[in-house]
Image (cartoon, rainbow, N blue to C red; front, top):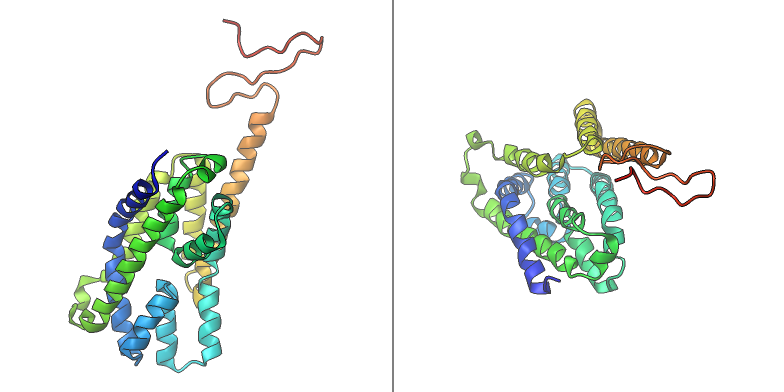
Length: 264
């Protein structure tokens, strides 16, 4: 079993490629926060407390427009509802941890950290995860992202105004996620989930408060679960053929011993 230190360093290394998209995102946030009239100290506090890029962007825009505090808080909560889906996904993997660990990992749970952590959790069963140090992997990925986000926010606040608009730094984030998700599309349910989520995201792009993101996530999850359940049901049917190519065993009606596949 890998040690806690080994898992931590593996999580850090897995997160490093994603930082190429996070750093420009932090720079852009810093510029937007200053443009909205948010003092540098409060802009940095938002990065530490909220720690959610999309919500910080929208919050800065609402501050600039003079929106009420209750509107800003409510909008931020709505945009971050997708984190409920993330937490529900990883909950079975961390339920054995102490409350202190759960609070820490919940704070570090972001889009990028989730994408890396869930890939690691998928490599082992739930029981194997409980007996391992996989939560250190999650922590390594999350704390690496957190530190990078704080530094990039500082750079955005104090240096971001010097970055020309022609660089189009905001395009780095979707490119990063595309590169991260593509290798995971290995079967029909995952491909269908990605396609349906993308289609809904495009169709619902103009919905207020980024509700299109939530709708897209729900659509992808429902489509993926539906196809997975259909596949699982087909494999349970008598005589159906699993991935190995051998028919499932069936117990004879005459009470003789069950046949284990084709005769050798």
